[in-house]
Image 1: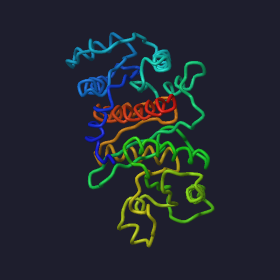
Image 2: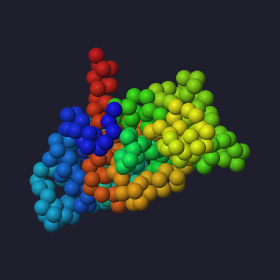
Image 3: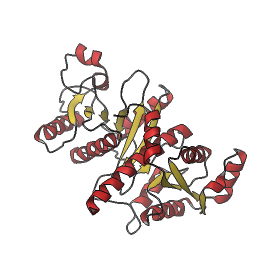
Image 4: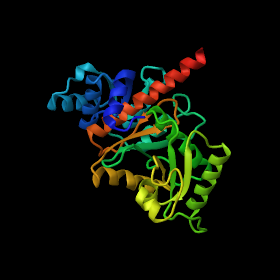
Length: 310
């Protein structure tokens, strides 16, 4: 089981390279991430966006832009559509958000005819490597689903499990995060958590161990769980943190980045291919980490496809 981003990079070097279509690539952190991914043998890049700006940024920062294919498209909406089209026709195996609104790239990704829609719910999974912990955390969903209902949360968990599986964790511990640890009639998330536990116990939701409702402290801290007298296989040992709303997930994501100064990555799961999606304010190292996870996810998809052909 992979526990550090350094190891994710190493495995991605074995699985790669994959090709990434980057929508609106005229951004320094995006170009640095793609450059580093290529140098590491993880990925090649198709850069879609304002060619003049892309080349100027590359020149100013000594990036060998001739190592990549550039598709000139100044309009952000059309750049997103072109990136999606390149993935749809098999020119790339991963889609990546550049300097563009999340809504625009997701609209293109879901567009009928060229899009990457499946029958699954799309959800965002942030993978965090936090000092002092012996495991990676999978935080979901802080970027896609605003106020997920019970059915959506089930699929959000399944998507999180898929990412954990790609990183070698084949039976992840899932905590349904709430403000309290007991069901409360004024907090729907607590009832959803209890139902998700029942689904897990019945086998309807499998491939993981689910507990909840749990507060964040007793989900990730053994000491906090003991202090509150909470006993479960998950309490204190949680890996996948299912947040009650997009606000909670987004705040936790950015708190990890800016307060804890920890390593993080972000990816959208549930489409035909992985979608690398980070905040536009995220660093090139965060984007590189996200690319590496995208490579591992794409490798799993290829292996599944090859098995079905056999």
